[in-house]
Length: 169
Image (cartoon, rainbow, N blue to C red; front, side, top):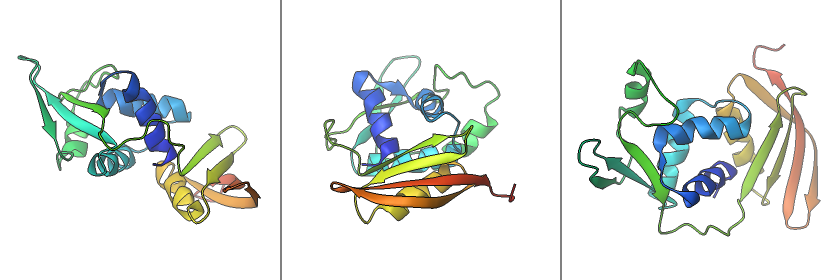
């Protein structure tokens, strides 16, 4: 489980959460919104591994139907929606914990970003540093991470680095 999945699990462990609300909440937790496409990619992978489950809740009847994947045009539907409210999902999508999740498991990797100082830290299991750097780059495509130091910390690898704007500034 990645650090992003861990955050989503922490939220839906408390209560079922609307999908769009989860997206907005995750942006607040990270200090900045991430691209919707990346959020949906992370959620789709978590659904596939049964870390979380996706539901469609009928607004009129309250009936819930489990979905085993995200609708293929969901990103387009969100983009076309005129009034998005961070408290709801306009399409009745919600997330709960999946059957395969270990809520006590530590993430395989996680990152923190200080946008003001343009620095980041990654803590990862050995061999997963590149995956974490890739996730960081996909979450903030306008920034380029550069590792400036790394060290072993017990069974984990700790990376620190700087962020610069992709345009070179």
